[in-house]
Amino acid sequence: MQTQTDTAISIAAARLLSHLTDTENHRIKVRVDGGVVTLEGTVDTNPERKTIENGVRNIDGVQGIVNCLCIHQTPK
Image (cartoon, rainbow, N blue to C red; front, side, top):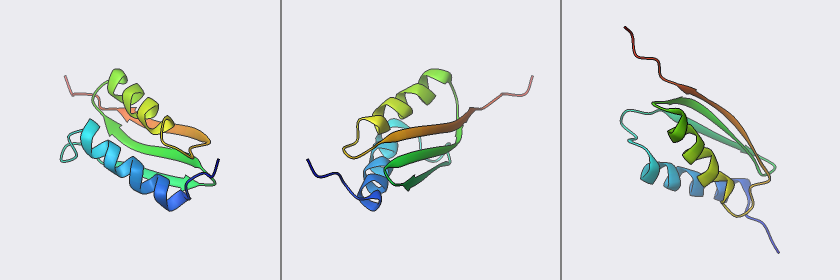
């Protein structure tokens, strides 16, 4: 089976993120190199972090994930 190019994976990841997150409140950067997706940025909760990771993992052509997403800490 032919895999998608890094560009196609990046586009698919951006589309997925627009459906999974409030893009105005989250700045998530996606980089793809050789099918390995690196996610960087901040999210509100660990379940949100895992949902994003699992969604990106299911994109055709993804060979691996480096999840560098941080959970936003609200000041007390």
